[in-house]
Length: 77
Image 1: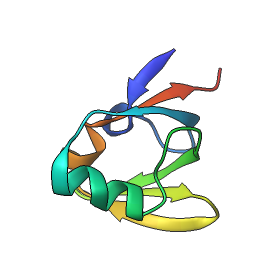
Image 2: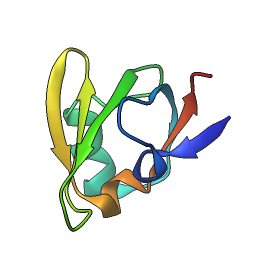
Image 3: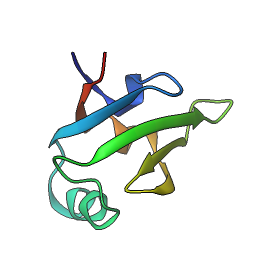
């Protein structure tokens, strides 16, 4: 099942399929190590829903919800 990172629940895992953004935002996401094929684990969200904390390539990363909407993943069942 595919979904965007902002729709993931805590401890849900998946692999990045594609990035929907372009320009500087896409470059920033790629520079953080979020590339197609990368394994992502959802850790938690802030009380108001923004930012979102994920684990990518062995490190914890906080990203904005607006950025997470552009990252499509294949969720592990």
